[in-house]
Length: 276
Length: 315
Image 1 (tube, rainbow over the protein chains, first blue to last red):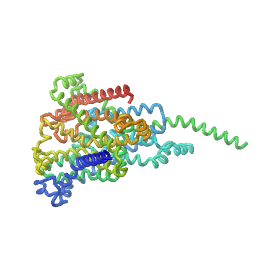
Image 2 (cartoon, rainbow over the protein chains, first blue to last red; image 1 turned 135 degrees about the vertical axis):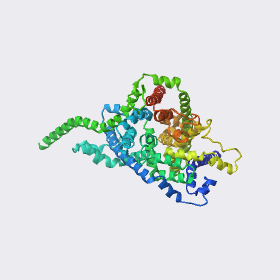
Image 3 (cartoon, each protein chain N blue to C red; image 1 turned 120 degrees about the vertical axis):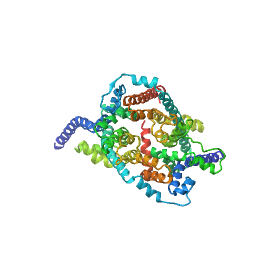
Image 4 (tube, chains in turn orange, blue; image 1 turned 45 degrees about the vertical axis):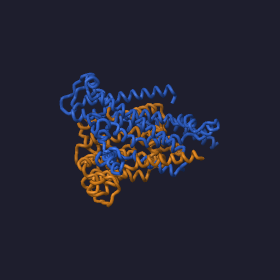
């Protein structure tokens, strides 16, 4: 009995420490963002004596968030649409329409997911520049879509495989063509999986930095949100409240989505690792 | 009579649909898969293959003069004459060992803790959701946050000193060659371990409880249950993540780039940052491709190693 209570307390202590270390930094940044520059100069990290919301307004304007969020938003929409279409079809074929050659496809996708970005980056960079797709929204959408194909296909497939196939078989016997089976029978049932995949892809594109650094940093009117923020915080590096406010603005969409759809998020992400 | 004819007709119809369905389904299956496959191959597969060629050329990547084929000279330069390469490579190794070691220890440990605790599902989900939060933050924001918090004069160190802690905590962790690499690695651990924790927790929770009951009947204590039931049960997931983490670690780039740029004094230089600098700053696209091929070769070696281990120990 005694040992159980000690274990309990140990658990609480460990969890508290972890929560403080995990969430503390964000809280400190939040504190900084609502302070005046004067107060922040004295002590940036303590809870604020006065709460000022000015910083957010100034950060929004100086950081050109209206424009960069528009750019990133377009990248998200384009990539999600492309991936759900391409990977949805491919996942359906892999899950339902069994063929021996499908194993080869799966191996290709698995191998593709281990190829490091740096392997294809150099030729891709040169090619994109030559055909003028660099620093363009469609060009970057194509890149994001392609890079996510293995992960999204596996994710959707692992979900589709679990669906009972009676409804589809019934539709087929009734003479439905395969595309109709896919769009009219499978999609209405499988939409949660597509939602999860879309969510993960969208957040990935919004958060993306490395790809944008190389392929989308040249046109200062067309900058995505994370790359633009990295410049913003460098330009105003002395003004902690301002850049903190900018950071919060930049991640606001992600945070809201996460808090609303936590379980979907976490389950979707970890499904990839468990599929092994 | 009519019934017999009807049944016969129905059977033939089904047989016919079956035949045409077979060939038609095959075609349809390929039509469904090809768009994704072709798209990926065109955009990623071909450049990846092209990289093999470019790594053997001397080429700036920008000028109109075409590349010059020079065989393996890039690799010779890289391994024998480049002073930065041994440093960057050793940093990548340190990165791999430290980040995997710490994040797996934390991930497994906390997952085990949570799996065994009787907190109730709602509380456990809430804690899981909160602990996972660092993992959804974009790299840019994480780097920004920690660069501020680790700043010697105004960061956490200064705060703690103001609170009265006696030691000199205003040490520039990111600014000293001795501590910069470990500091950046720690930031990635901070961000990365919740993913593993959640993954392993889910894996642990899919182990059938009967296995634990059987172990208890055999007289196994808590540790033995962990060793004989839990660990084998989650081993496939652990193994897979080990391999992927090792591979990914050689592609590390963002955090170093955003927090230190490879310095101070090359103490955080990685293969990834080397590649980027050679491509963009030095205009050596061929050489950069060679570095990319090196990273890929290391990944391939890791895959081979892990596959061997898996076959040998039947994981």
